[in-house]
Image (cartoon, rainbow, N blue to C red; front, top):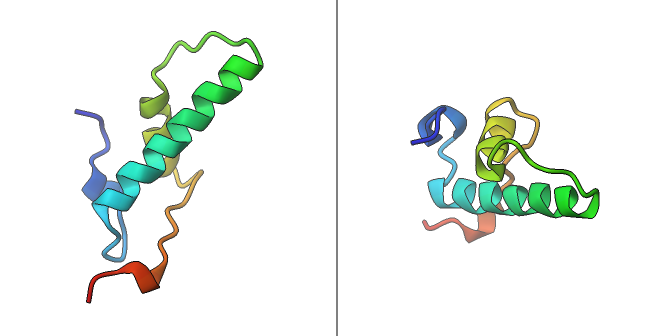
Length: 69
């Protein structure tokens, strides 16, 4: 289990599913950047991505028109 939990990161009734997708995309970007720069990663990319969202270095932006009503 990664800390912080999703409930600590999400604000304003944001979707947990959206957070999972955003973290996965960010983790892939971290991995791609490391590969391009030939850098060895010491920490798992998902953990780094979760920490970045928790520190508000990256924000979750949802399209309000896609929300269930």
